[in-house]
Length: 52
Image (cartoon, rainbow, N blue to C red; front, side, top):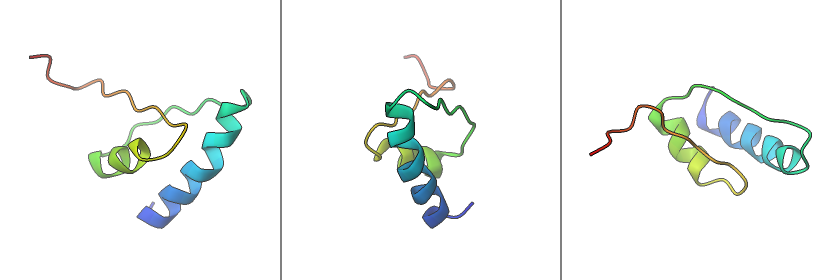
């Protein structure tokens, strides 16, 4: 999935999720996670983060 497709998917999924009709869980690379972090209504949970 390229950056444009990712942004469009996030733009579509965020308001649907906010309405409580969809929960989306996925595994993404850092570039996609960074794009998701900049999308209103999206929460990114990093499970492989250093805990220092």
